[in-house]
Image (cartoon, rainbow, N blue to C red):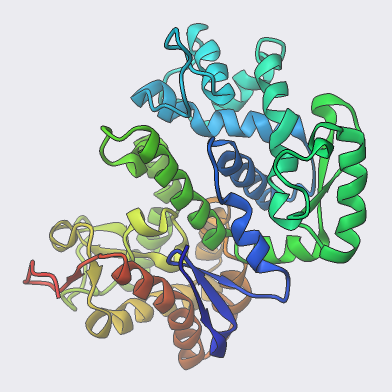
Length: 398
């Protein structure tokens, strides 16, 4: 694991993803996903992050596991990605995969069904999936916290004594402040309770943390499916990716109709049907659709850019100009403000973006400073990971 401390901005960079330090035990948090022989930790933590974004703080095991199954649905059904090992008969022993295979046999869902549809079917078939859910709930919620309890070895008998383990976690939490504690409810109704200090950290750094989890998940799945290329593109259907940009397209289209928009690559005005919405830093690296990384660009030039980084010195200022234009117009025109609010669910998950960037009457130099301070570390991490640099009119990597 690569950890870099940037003291001037109080951030740490973990495997190329930057996370802001707020005096919690970030080191132990980073190691929560270490030594994963199964995929459960990745899906469990990512499901918690998603539910936290929906203002859930006290969450049942059942709700988290249902989200885990829905998250893996597309990868397993459409591309037959293995979530874990198989037994001697060639059947998966991974409980997420087994649950998905049971659902798929019902023929209720298209493989490309959106997550909400999958969740509904998961919830409707609770009895069918009960054994798989219980198997996941048996260890995952507790073992994920093991980096905060190093004194418990992997074979310590306390791991198998749930009542005592829950009490132990509660006691340890008083001095170590773990991300969550665990309630005393029974079975799948048992809950995790997000600690308040961790909640603020997790919400503020939602995108960065989920990107880090995604990176870990992709590495695991690539190891389990070595002959499958482009794992990162097989985690969710294309129509889901398209949907997440739908409201952003509507917002930029409305801005174009009012003031026009300059293409950041050519410097010329974009024509009505000459542009598309794309990511400044490639989606394949950030794996999100946050507003602060999206821009309208000339379609043909964007095709030329492909999966490279636009030259920072040449294009960042133009990109920031368009972002500043968006912010000013959102506060000037009520119809744009309405469209902006519709982007909240899929494109405004970074708390800093609504607290520090997209705010009323922010000065241009301050806007540029905030955007550069957040975007540049991610850009440099992508470059370190081998992403090439692109300039309009040149396909060469710098």
